[in-house]
Amino acid sequence: MEQYDPHAFPPFAVTVDLAVLTLRDGDVSVLLVQRKAPPFAGQLALPGGFVAEDRDLADAAQEKLAAKTGLAITATHLEQLGTFGSPGRDPRMRVVSVAYLAFADAEPPGSSASWVPVEEAIASDLAFDHSQILDAALERTRSKLEYTTLATRFCPAEFTIADLRTVYELVWNTSLDPANFHRKVMATKGFVTETGHTVSRGKGRPARLYRPGGAEVLSPPLTR
Amino acid sequence: MEQYDPHAFPPFAVTVDLAVLTLRDGDVSVLLVQRKAPPFAGQLALPGGFVAEDRDLADAAQEKLAAKTGLAITATHLEQLGTFGSPGRDPRMRVVSVAYLAFADAEPPGSSASWVPVEEAIASDLAFDHSQILDAALERTRSKLEYTTLATRFCPAEFTIADLRTVYELVWNTSLDPANFHRKVMATKGFVTETGHTVSRGKGRPARLYRPGGAEVLSPPLTR
DNA sequence: CGAATAGTGTCTTTAAGACACTATTGA
DNA sequence: TCAATAGTGTCTTAAAGACACTATTCG
Image (cartoon, rainbow over all chains, first blue to last red):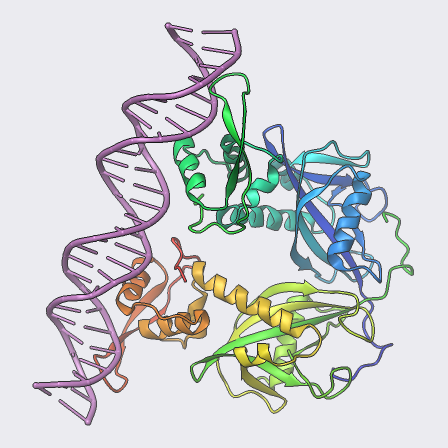
């Protein structure tokens, strides 16, 4: 196997698939496309596609996201999730898919794509092994909220502590004590920075607005 | 990109590369092979090779490990680390490498492979982007010891609490309070199970021997 | 015996959780 | 005014860290 024969390597196709998550109408939603051609024609699938020969994997992922959504959606976070390459995952040929996890603003999707609440998406019958990829994406997201500041990536540029708490509550599907959450966030250096602005949203005392702080890691972590 | 043309996909080769770690002579060591053919002939590299068309990725990784070491080394843990596919990472052609992280017993390696202390390996000039892969492997290992019971995978079938502590100390390159570590391990349900045996190793009071408990996750985690 | 390592007790400090309380708005 | 949400204070509890102490072995 140390010997190299350029014509002997097995023929693989490499794709990227994206699990793009956002918060929308009180749900964690994922961006799905409807397949037009076989296999799995008509079924919902994660956006993705073949990697061009001269493209880096992460660049290819960015590019597919832009293509599927008509440039409307910008990822606020993009990371490699894992690689799925069982023989037979694509009935046509051997395809290895590098899956990426992205967080995005909840812009209206392009005509060919739609936001679907994750619970619903997982329950539905996605194309290929995309249900498995989506499972992994959701679990990765849940666990990364514990020990990173990535929850801010689901928030607008300026957000309240309650906005941030809502991210945790939706992703973890729990409810958190507002008082303790507030204190915890403020005690974690670099989690958020005060802007000096406040915002009033109907009822109640107006809330201060914050921006993401410089930190990426939470120590000690938040607990689910 | 929804349209499928079986002859139009870009030609990729897919390889697996393994970062196999063990504890040996008070060092965290990694299994390296010396490349026989260009590119990077003569340089040290992680073991690995092309994935056969009908093989699952994880199976291919297991198989490469066995092949490189003459079946002498058995992985006590194997997990996907990440996929490295920059165009140009292999000067010959477009190669996407799925990297695996493995832990193994410190058996003597086969003739074509050798154990190298990780610090030394990282400082040396490995083939391809294998230094980057090894960096990721070490960081993944360090972080997984915090919140999983994987440290037991570096221990023999029966081990003392001091053995387990040594794993943490070597991987994290710190020293831990023996008393507090002992109490912490015992307090974490499912981390270890008592065997009833004890072992005396030269000086000091003989230590009890334990086996891995059923748990995989530590909550609360250990801190570095 | 002393030196060395295993293992326990206990005190201090830190952080989480419960929850009462104050602050500031809209209706 | 009340209802609602933002934010603080404070007490209780759990767990980490420091470190004194006991337990059991070898030489």
